[in-house]
Amino acid sequence: MAGGQRSRERVAWTSATPVLALVVLALEWGRDLPTWAVIVSVIVLAAAVLSGVHHAEVVAHRVGEPVGSLVLAVAVTVIEVGLILAVMAGGGVGSDTLARNTVFAALMITCNGIVGVSIVVATLRGRSAGFNAEGAGGALAAVTTLAVLSLVLPSVTTSSPGPTFTTPQLVFSAITALGVWGLFVVVQTMRNRELFINGRDDDLEMYDGEKPSARDTRISFGLLVVALLAVVGLAKVLSPTVERTVVDAGLPISLVGVVIALLVLLPESLSAMQSAGRGHIQKSFNLAYGSAMASIGLTIPCIAVASIVLGRSVALGLSAAEIVLLALTVAAGILTVTPGRATLLQGGVHLAIFAGFLVISVSP
Image (cartoon, rainbow, N blue to C red; front, side, top):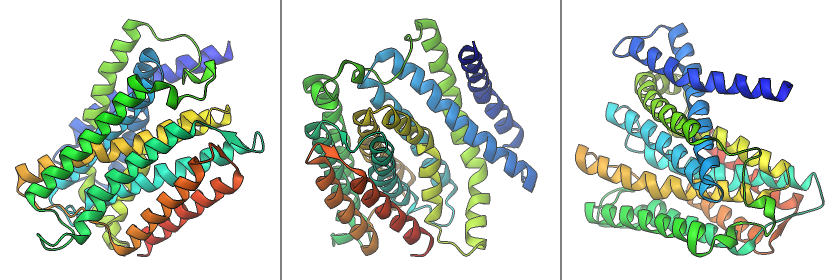
């Protein structure tokens, strides 16, 4: 009885939040906001993100696993791209590096934060946590390739000044990112689906309980669209205030990208932790690496199109410190996934790298 009541309460607030967010957006659009209104908007924005991902989960539950993990990853990436484009359109301080900062932050959060916490949670239940090394290794290889081609190459090419691509290079990077992501989707969902489950029947599905009806799925899809529109609009309204607050506090403007990535990946992080707590760490890895890949494979093409249309240069190349962190992440990831079984030590290593990223973000 109590479980059913909690479920109904969750449905009630997740259904009302997108509509509430849209109303708040209509009331605040084009106005200078007082402090109390900014606080309310931030709370509503965060609630809209959580609501949007909840409705994406309903759709994902309907289509099943591992396609469900991809649906979640795409939904989160759509929110991420919307937030980036909303800030870029405003042309504020650091808008040319926002995409790079957000995508890199997403990589560190997924490949170190989510992976690390998931391993720690899973190994608290036993001495080690097993997963399919072939699937996790292939996903990590794809993430590494996309990260290097999209975020490292701009820092070492010489055809354009600074950490930027020329237009042909940007087009190549966008097509490659989208192509590798699409290839991964085909492999994960059709050709080699067995590599992304752990060989047990309960690993085939990510969610408990009966699948939602077709009617509930359609309603959730509609509310998901409303939530996405509200999130992007509220981000547009709040971006000048957020940028001004970061600058006034003496913090690097790159922190805005970290905040965006933390916000959009919070629901997925919670889902990964819940799966790890039930002993399904393979699902946690699917979420982590799938989100990392979608963050690059979908974000970079969208940013490339926006850059060309708006005629605005976008700095994608990482700094030397960030390249070092990326290299360390890849090395630790390889050593983690190769045995097909992780211990508490691997989880602690990934969390240490993630902590180093947070320190560098605040104090470059």
